[in-house]
Amino acid sequence: MSSSPADLVREFHRAFGLDARSRPTEVPAELAAQRRALLAEEAAEVAEVSVGGPLDRLAHELADVVYVAYGTALVHGVDLDQVIAEVHRANMTKRGPDGQAVRGPDGKVLKGAHYEAPDVTAVLRRQGWQPDGG
Image 1: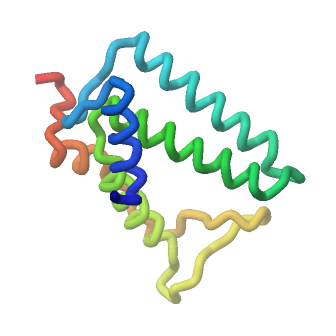
Image 2 (image 1 turned 135 degrees about the vertical axis):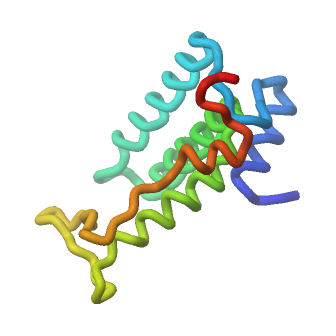
Image 3 (image 1 turned 180 degrees about the vertical axis):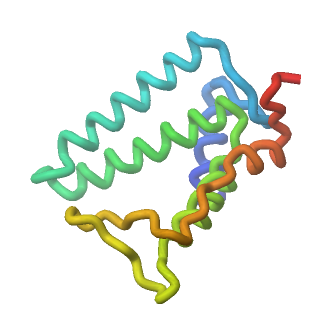
């Protein structure tokens, strides 16, 4: 059995008769609202334990966020692994010419002069998405 989050969530969706699409597509508003509520619920649970909560509970809640995010991507027919790879590629361009990151006062890595935004549209098009709905 694969331990890939995408494969595990796909197995869950198939086992329980949940929506799963193989090509990026818009979904009915009711389904989108359901996914939004699930994501919000899981994000709130992470926020609740992120400072001062026990580490095992934080790990559980983080896993739930990832699980629901992958499920939401599956419902929309998005290969999230490919999107994450593109976002990672873009994030790695935040380094300056010296290979160092520029950080804000809070420690956050900032977008430098060499930053290249992710081209998620191109990734989705390679997956079969047609933004005009055609």
